[in-house]
Amino acid sequence: MISEEVFLLHTNSKSDSYAAAGVDVTAGYQVVDRIKPLVKSTYIDGVLGSIGDFGGQFAPNLTGMTRPILVSGTDGVGTKLKIAFLLDKHDTVGIDCVAMCVNDIICCGAKPQFFLDYIACGKNIPSRIEQIVTGIADGCRQSGCALIGGETAEMPGFYPIDEYDLAGFTVGIVDEPERIDGSKLAAGDVLIGLASSGVHSNGYSLVRKTLNISETFYQHSDELGCTLGEALLVPTRIYVRAIQALVASGADVHAISHITGGGFYENVPRMMRPGLTARIDVSPFPLPRIFDIIRKTGDIPVRDMYNTFNMGIGMMIAVPAADADKAIAALQAAGEQAYLIGSVAAGDAGVEVQL
Image 1: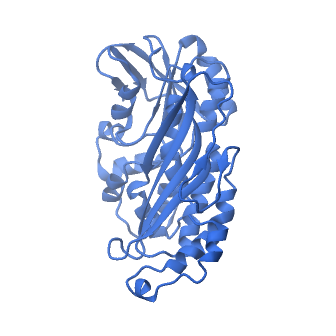
Image 2: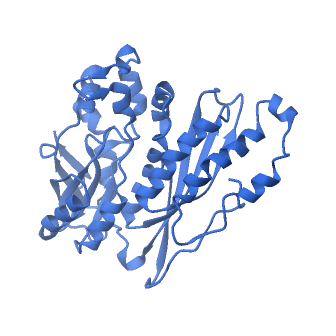
Image 3: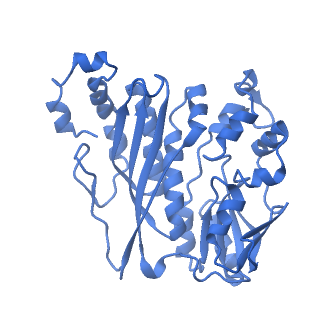
């Protein structure tokens, strides 16, 4: 990104030859002017420097910490972007990008500090980049972290003119004694699931293969309360503030899993220690209608659905049985739909799902 001062210095910066090759540097300067207020809206204590410095700078508050641990995460939005291209709606995929990163690091108990984005496109269209960054800034504000840098790469001939890719990177911090690493997980712990907002950002290759993109994609569905395209573009829920509220409640959080690609069968075992298995009952939580539509349309086995999608649960948390009520109350007070969906038992399966 380019600072206001640098932007003014570069008002005479242009290359007709480079523009003829498909890269318009002046469009980049227009983008900077458009996104400056968006970026600044995410600033929190600790941000140093300004938009456009060669490196994003951040001074974390380490007061009271005994051994600060940095936790990093990086991810993208994947082929969900194809839905954004079809609907020509680009102001929510940035939320997805932030969510996929910050939801990962909060599983360790880390508070997100800052975020950086990477946008690669076939053509730099300033109004579209502004829409993308609008979503990124929204996601950063939701998770309480600052957008301190990024890159927009115009790559003609590599990406189609109307397409782009989007990825991000975040760094968080947690004091070592408060780190959530699964070491306290034990048989008898209960599992709490937090409702997802929909498909989130995983499994879209199967979604696009299953659901033919036809006129019905753009037509209102009484079953969904919106069009199919709109349902598929609902942004990923960000759970950072809810997990922070849970920890602040005093509930003893033993382990957390972000339910992303691979669904229950891939992600839940990641929170288990050797010799422990999660036993999950899917009946306590509602199945969002979008998943039923995908399954029925594609005649997809139920187990495959739970091995691909979040199926209505975006985050899973393990706490001692004695803390279950306290934990659920804290999560609900933070605005989440929380369900008691299983327990931890002895075993080597990693996860057993009662379908």
